[in-house]
Image 1 (tube, rainbow, N blue to C red):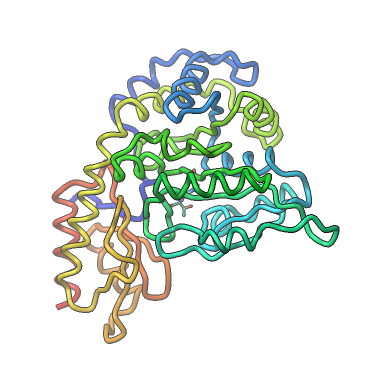
Image 2: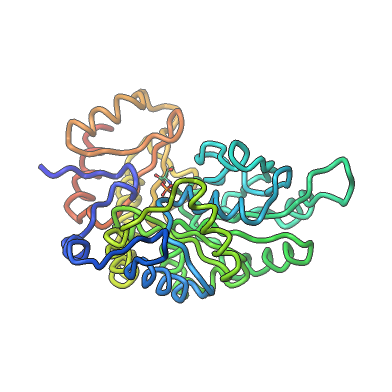
Length: 345
Ligand code: TLP
């Protein structure tokens, strides 16, 4: 029986077409700027997201960190959501490595930060305060349920941050999920952003890598920081070859993952004892929790599902996350719903 791995879309493996392209990739030393496949990927990625230039980085975490380090000096402040990936899951890198101070604002259920809260977070020009330099938005928003931030909202925040002299960075690890779900071009979701990171791994299935995009000047600074952080990867055109296929072939099919997430959530919603406090999925993430009357322990649920070759994520004491992706089939979705029915009856 195949494993249905719903813990994350980070578990995706490269497609056969990617493996073939990787084997044939032309490579060179990227620290010298001489890897033709990486150079090509960076150009394609920047054009696809509507920015002047791109930089291939090993991970989304490094992309976000480099963006913060380019935009901020030590002692500056970065405003971000209290459920943002950069705040929760990037090991505090912005402070530990950049000396940058995180100022959190409450994330609303829909992944946004309220405009009044953002305005309230901007520091006045006073020697007592750090200098507010950067604001980060996340799209799709992971911990808010994989929700999509709209183009209008992002534009409003972009204009506001610029008016106050701050930069806007978008953690667009899953920006193409957002674009496909909203039925818009990804470019339009990041137009007012000064920089954006997106992942080629995750739903797009490349084995490794993200791209940080921005102006040419921004990317030149970012390249030095990538080297400083140990992210100069030499003949990584082998990885970039998979990234090119990710951008060319894997974006439109994300709609299938979204449909699978919807089917999964609708199936589970029929089961007494399961609730969707964060709402039904907008993209490829299904968050659900156990109603108070359910006696099953969280660990018991995970173990019993694992016995059926189904892996799911735990994100709170009685809260779970399942993420659909290219390697989760119709059969896997049906098997998962059935396994939950059996568990709960
Ligand atoms: N998210 C992972 C875990 O780190 C939680 C996951 O399983 O969802 N931004 C966002 C919004 C992300 O969800 C992630 C990964 C990253 C950045 C970091 O990307 P990587 O793993 O490439 O460093």
